[in-house]
Image 1 (cartoon, rainbow, N blue to C red):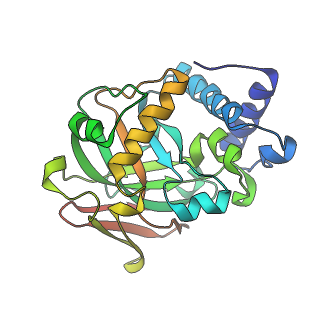
Image 2: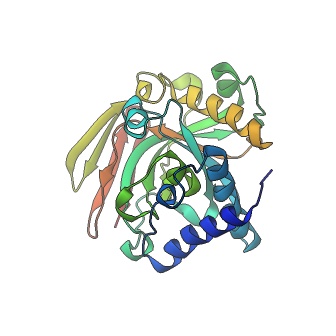
Length: 261
């Protein structure tokens, strides 16, 4: 359930205009140093609702700030989340025009596709595993409508958790076919390794991230629905992307996912 005030409408418009024009806005937390996390989520929901009214479809959610390093950087002790829209999906090996992003970075993570609804609170990691149809490797292209990535927690939440685009791999795996905590990943840019990671980098287990999300969304009356795609959080630091770059992430037992700029 979204709560709309004049401030929420105004700040949502700033982010929407930045996305349309390609010119980043000043941090919302500069305009209002007391901007709350709850207000930030309602700003996010305001822009998502506008896009849905324009014909876009919500097809899942993304979880951000799952690593301790990123949480410490922003001075928080829990992740955040954003919405995935059908307009954000890029085919495996596809190309993203650099004109469609402001300051992109690429992260490698695991995507959960659900076969059952998850309705918090009190969802456990086991509940997530039982509700998961399959897992695929993924790349998330994070982006910020805030100038120079000068963000605090409310800034990134309001900006749909700094979402941009995402790419899903082709190989689907059942949860009992892989060890989520020990699953290894290598992220490369232009055929040079830039980062490595394991599943445990995301709150100890990517499925734990999905459980957190289901419980967090219950505060807003939002369920995770069967068929939704859930990006469970980066397994390593994000890598900057620029025109001409090619990225690939190779996952043990899950194959490769690629994107070009």
